[in-house]
Length: 259
Ligand code: NDP
Image 1 (tube, rainbow, N blue to C red):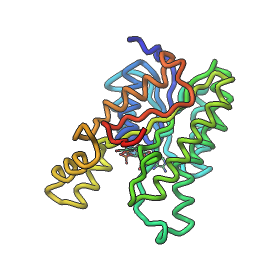
Image 2: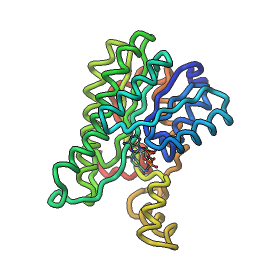
Image 3: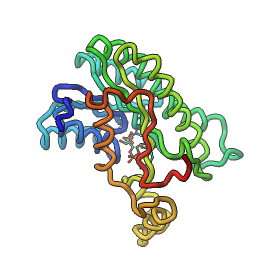
């Protein structure tokens, strides 16, 4: 299937490793140019070099903390200098581990800025120019925790649920401009983040730990791969998914236990 993405430009936040890097590579494989956003310049350089070498499409990067207003402004300036973009994937995010009684306001605001305000600030800057290019797509990466909370990460659950609602709300406002907004809620996806957590908790038996997590939570009894998720992202951002507007898609190996 031709996804009709050749010549499009996609901005992906959190794209130097894990899901974001997989999504950036999947876009490049389809012939799209990509803009890699993360905080570490060295990681950006590696990701950009790898994509350019493997796919020959144009990859650029911008080192920015999207949890800050200044970081989002840097992303907007970079994209404007390129002439705009057609696709935005809000993927940068991370788990939390404080309880409600432990966490101060600063923690709540930190995650609110990363999971919600980054998407708001980038949309405010990018949507008008996406519209002048004829429309496009925004895809927000929330989490299964937006709908089925994990007890140990309340701030993550709440801010990802907000991102899911933001997606629905954005979709209504932006569709008259030809911009489709959707949300993906992944379940367990094997990324460096998960592997590091497993090593911290279980040392040498970290692979066994990951299997026990999959056995407990996912009907399919395994983690998903980054590639399995990335293909779904790319399809939803492509013109082939033209009728998908304001929806949330679970890619979770059967983890969600409710309707
Ligand atoms: P990783 O930790 O593997 O990668 C995170 C990426 O985001 C890195 O490129 C990191 O680079 C970047 N990043 C983190 N914070 C910021 C920031 N403030 N500004 C800009 N870039 C940032 O994460 P995953 O691939 O595991 O997860 C990606 C997304 O998917 C997250 O939103 C997560 O909540 C969601 N998700 C993941 C699941 C999983 O099982 N892995 C399941 C459900 C949802 P740098 O540190 O250099 O900034």
